[in-house]
Length: 228
Image (cartoon, rainbow, N blue to C red):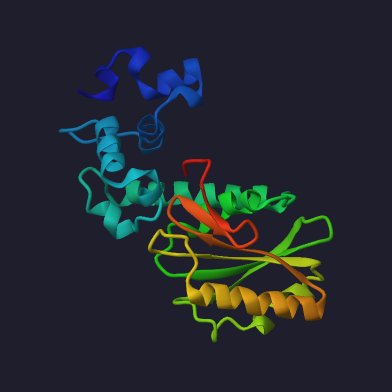
């Protein structure tokens, strides 16, 4: 059945206009953006199949090529999907700029969207002022993390350059398991020691997993409160 053949109370766009976006399912919201389906399936059916296969989080990391392999998704629709998720990441970055970090979860939830879907380990240094507001960030390393490769000099050079009062470092585990390795703990120890010498405190080392994160400061794994 075509979307136009559905009753008005069941059509996604009409539902949004009448009831607002919050009541719509993820598939309905995606269908509004992608607009049209094929002769065999309407766009709502295509979106439901996409989300059933990938889920929202995995869909957000699909490449243009992967998306175009799916029925009903050509180059234009694949570009729309990739652009949609990239916009959401940029919005997340804007929110980060005004954030005052009071606990690990304040920053872990935001960086889950940025790092959680990546297929390689990314080590990010976040620099904060005296009020724990984020000044800037730097990606220090990409690839398999090794205690000998993450040198405190690289982390604290950015902190000094940013006139930071403190630092939070984060990295992702592509396996989805946020529990720290021996290397992770060694990296943390070296950064704490260097921070003490420089007078720039390491507030936390957070490891991002698939749907959870580990905090060195809290000493535990916590579940994400939001479904990205």
